[in-house]
Length: 466
Image 1 (cartoon, rainbow, N blue to C red):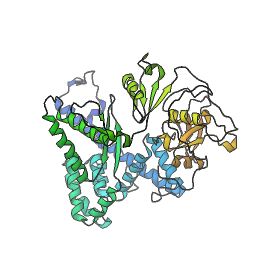
Image 2: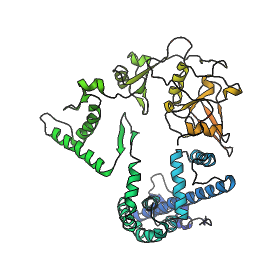
Image 3: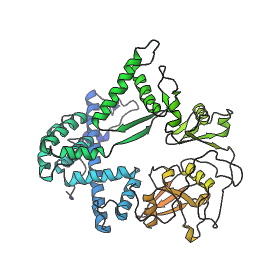
Image 4: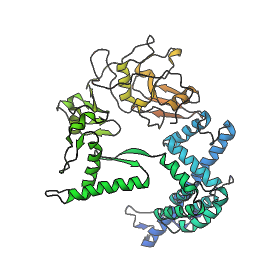
């Protein structure tokens, strides 16, 4: 499959390449566009988009093969520095997270070397990228000798069915070919259970969990059952969907020592509140906003900007919210020079706010779970100041220590990092927020829960995956 044909697709030479559309898109040249013209144009664009996506994946796989030849790295050893460096380069090039880059590399490899018929259908625009991905993902775990049969049974439907229906059919075909593997796959999938928070617009967010099917269905039944009971209560004005969302919220909050409310208002505390587990979340509130003199937005860790009223309410609540008040005027950089290696508490707090996440390109691991790294190593006369410190997760701390990636920081203390990759390309990492560094005297940060143990610059021998 390495001899991928990169010739331009047939759509390039068809009659529509010389269109001259007017501002309304209703005419091209002297001929009025009919519905059929629009349909042909959309079909051409679909073919073009699909063909381009297939070519991009083929190029990505060629890039992987060349890198493996040059460095000796291999996808079978994803923890090696060579592979992680390559993966970081792909993520930076495509402006995606490294986990997404790893997934894309694996998808490209499987398409070109295992599910070959699926790749040919994808390259010919007979199936979309989503259809091809379903065939590959649902075909995981099928023995190599059964892949051809699996594709023969699934691909004819891939050109007919929408993705959701194809996914169900492919799952059935896989189960019929390798029923004994279902238990092992499920056992492995159970180990991947997790919760996820996905910020949404206008002060909202999605919160959910990946569970076993029976647990998820049972949980949904509990939520809906409770919601339906409340729906018919006198005075209830919420829609069922709104009540379900409120019940979902209250069930979690009840575990913290509060009870659900009929009206969907704020949760009411119960005696068990003293025994509940409380969240610890930073909420950044400008001082003038907290005083009610301005409406400047606050910042909620893990989400982003929140309106001033919400920020004020959170800043005034009991424990659980870690309040951070910021001064409106610019302060000077706090410097402890070369005499101190360990990062002082006030400076650590400032760096957590400034960085928010690991400062490697595209990484989103929270700063509170990262190491504070001296950009210029302390043993090389690097100072313990804001302009020479940044958070790096253990994995990227090791990557920096390998010398395959180099990093420089803006000497002005703004926290802008410039990374140079092993191929010589440069990528810029901006700080999460722009705040003045703390002063030597006078508290800028108040009532913060600070991390007390910080790793040395020397990366650990064994680091967790990132």
